[in-house]
Structures are given as C-alpha cells and as structure tokens.
Image (tube, one colour):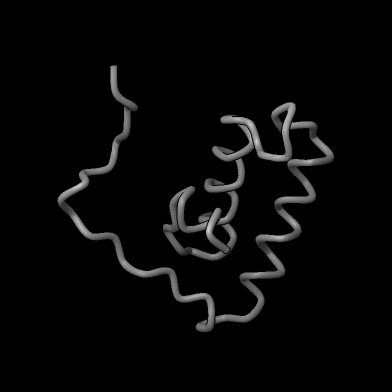
Length: 75
C-alpha cells in the first residue's frame, strides 16, 4: 500500500520563510540536539517517528510557525 499522510497533496503549503526571524534556526538546532540526547533516532543518522513528531510539535509551540516535517527536514 501507499504511504499514509494527513496532508492533501492538492493543497500547496506555504513556503517556509526562515529569514523572518533568525532565532528560528537556533531554535530548530536546539530541538534537534534535544531529540538526539533523548535518543529519538533511527539506526542511521535520521530521527525516529517519535523524534520528528516531537521536533515538529515543539518547534510550532516555540515559534508559532506551523512547519511540517518536510519543511524542517529541508532546513
């Protein structure tokens, strides 16, 4: 079967604009370190599903930006 997603592929998401607030990159990096220390990683170099969920949720809580996993991952 296909990948389960909650997003509608026909709806364009807004482009992530990291230049609005330069502290967002620092926030993102700090949250990544937090997830690494919590051992929310896969055997490779990526984050586990739980790690990404925590990253997306905490980033949204701290910045008010509703960026999804793909937008954060491309940063």
